[in-house]
Image (tube, rainbow, N blue to C red; front, side):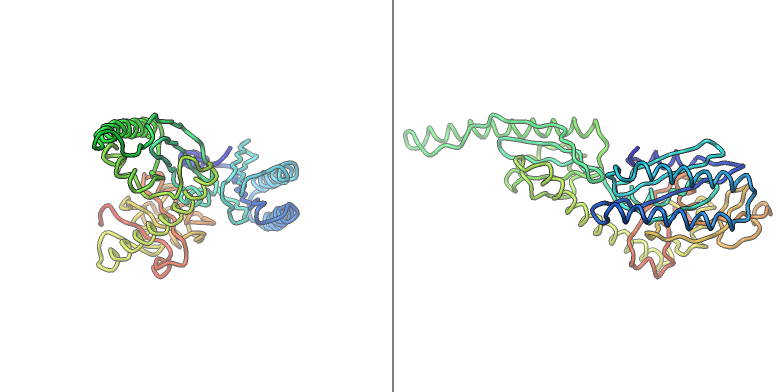
Length: 381
């Protein structure tokens, strides 16, 4: 199964075992950057190091046996399938004691790691998904139009259309009247052509969920198509492609990825600037791990911001499910808190459970100065 939606991550994060731990395995399998031998060596070293770690863990024999079998199953799978894997990354989640096994192919390479915890470690999946937008690309000219669905490095042709707009003519006839009549005729056909494109665009957009629209056309055709587009579509147009209907899908994909990268960086800079501005004026925002976790526990968070690859141990209340940096007892119910290997991953899951937006941002950024984590708030208590 390939990573493709937030729903996959939410479903995975719901798996929890009361009696066993779950093994989360991430491996960089990008053959564009490494040869097969390097990938194989990476996974063998990863498994070897974590088998040593497992032996030193102070857990029950039942849990230890389940985790050991997880590693054996992962080792067997990688030995048999890594050579034929053509994805940039691989994630495996296993809990042998609960007969749980889930494999997800990744479009981007993760950091190699194995995590033993009560539930699947999903933070890297969320980071990868947050890096990509579903793009609706339309290339058009006076004779042709093509619509594409672009997501996570893949492009699919949704529809193509060939118009019947006549070619332009040289001036002719008595005092040019004949050529003017033909020009009006051509203009009518051109208008009808763009109207059909606008109608088809709206129908295709309604059938699919897209984040952004990219247009590939000359300036003169943009002025033709824009007035005919539905207002909602106009609000989704994020950029212009240097691409034409005659270009190959590979060319359209490459150009779309270039534009997506530029827009993502611009969007990230703008939203972090807004967050920092809100922090500095003491508005509806918090930063730093302790304050952010406290706001998340209270249900105040609207949007959670995390720096890529930021992880930190912490503690979690087994009853209230409140998250803490170092509280040994939950202030709410006075229960002893449990250790969490990565409280950032727990915060991510808590945010998703509370229907908060989650944004991952690149380092180094100004957010690093504020503890690598922060949030916009709905309200402040």
